[in-house]
Image (cartoon, rainbow, N blue to C red; front, side, top):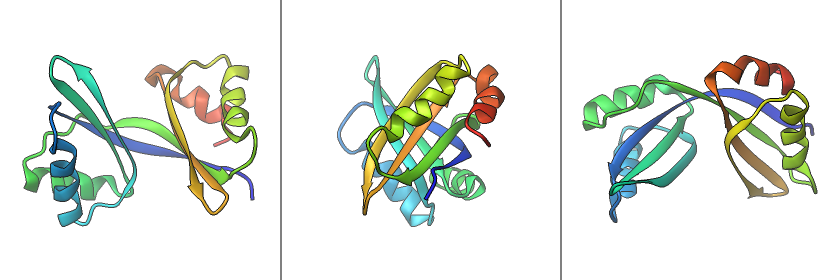
Length: 137
């Protein structure tokens, strides 16, 4: 099966960089039945961390954030790539952007088991449409 690439909307939450903050956010989203396609957390310095949330349904995430008193960023855009795991799978996707002279802001990829892989990647907002074209969507 060929790779699938889709546009995704994501949001981030800034939290204190301390134990339990990720669990607090994820528990609130679970309680509100928010299904996440991707989640990424990392320190940003100054005792803070950023948690990126890529929801299956952005409206459900926004509603859950309101009822849970979570402060979401404005909507951002990224790409979600899924496909059959193979040698060079991520490199094949990255090559398409390189050929289009598009810089990648960040990327994360992992094996998903059952011979599948997934990747989320970010480009500058000004490059988003060109990146979509380069990725064939």
